Structure formats: C-alpha cells, structure tokens
Image (tube, rainbow, N blue to C red; front, top):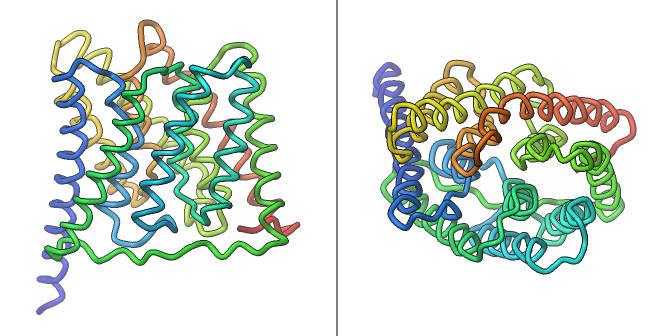
Length: 320
C-alpha cells in the first residue's frame, strides 16, 4: 500500500472514531432527556471517549476490571460524602481528595478522570444514587464499545499495564499532590467559589504533574484547550439550548465536536478539556454564565501549580 493510501486510510479511521465518540456522548444526553434525569450526564464521558475510542496509544495505566471498579467505587463514595458526612464541604473535599489519590496508589492505576467521579458530587452537591448507576453504565458501555472497535480493527488493542511505583516514592507522590490540591482548593471553597474547583481542572493538574505526560511542558496549550472547552460548553447551554431551544442532545455533542476539531488543529488532545464542554449541562441559573470566568481562574491556578510541580519534580525527584 502506498504511503498516501495509508495516510488516507488512517484519516478515515480517525474520523470514524470521532463519530463513534460523539455518538457515545449523544446517547448519554438522549438517555438524560428521555428520563429527565441530569444525573445521567457524566462530563468525564467526553474525556473517556476521547482516550478509549479515539486515541490509539494507552494514555492511562488501567485494565477493564480496574476502570469499572475504580469509577464505580469513587462515584459511590462521592454520593456517600454528600448524603451522610457530618462535615462541611472543606473537610469533605480534602478527605475525598486524599482517598481518591490513595486509591490510585492502591490500585496501581492513573485513571485520573475517576477523581471527577468522586469530587463532582461534592463540588456540585449531587446527592442522587442515579449518578452512581449512570457512571457504572457509561463505563461499562465504553468498555464494550472499545472492545468491539478493537475486534473490528477500527483501533489497535490497548496495552494494559500497571504503574510501577517504587515503595519509597508513593508516599512522596501522594503527600505532594494532596498538599498542592488542598492549598489550591481552600480559598475557593472557603469563599464558596466552587466552580473554580470543577474536577476536570484538578484532573488537568494531575495529568500535568505526571512524568509521563507529553503536555507538561506546554502549559499555554493546556490553558487554551481548557478555556475553549469552558466557552463552548457555556455557549451550548446559554445560546443553543437557552436562546435557540436546540435540544441538549444536539447542542452539546455539536460543541464537543468543535472541541475535538480544536484538538486536531492544535495537534494537542487533552481529555479534561473535553469534559469541561459538558459540565454546563448540569449547572443551574447564573452558574452557567459565571462558568467560563471561574474556569479560567481555576485553570490558571492549577496549571501554574502543575508547572511548578514539574520543576520541583525534576529537581527533587518527586517521581511517579
């Protein structure tokens, strides 16, 4: 096969993968509209569909059993914090953050979007058990779709490997990241600026602070993609849905398609930015209008923290 034919075939497969990923998100919104349950919308589905349906290389070290168990357990714990914890949002946020990071160490995974599964209910005060079943169903369907794509030759099989975290490093990894997240989160939570702490932004910090991340040396690209995601999500909710009365199962997949187009244009695929596009779908009232502003502030805060972390990692060997 000629080189030009190979490139054309590769581009065709990539387009099909993007269409399947958009279809996956559209199905989630259709289910939400049909049952009139916003808890069925899990924003990280956009990030998961990008990595597991579009990108060939294994970004996260996790197998099928681990991804199902981690997401299910984290979403369940997140709802338990909201419904049963006697503490306020600051203690709940700090405890949940520590448990989420510790869970990555125990399971030897770096499936960082699961962080959102636990923190999203606390930050946005989601207290319905429907959320847990929605996360479980979305992850199960995602695994099935990826498996079928691999069987059909539409994407390469994923190489699942566990993280090799040395015993003398995991304590540094856990304490350092939890300390940074806690310091960055205290002021926004204290002043009730929860939108600065939407989980995809914190996931962005975890991705940047990873020694395996290709984007850790390109913070300007990460900021640009995060801001585009927030603006597109707000445009979908306020203009397409609110003003033009376009159904959400059309508006949000459309804006997510534009975010994916920006990924290809910039040659940078950053999964948390895709999740930001879907968050306005589960916000209420004036929070939607304020969403881009607070996301920009939070993104600058956590991306800067990630960049500083990168420099300190290289100097003091706080490695993953």
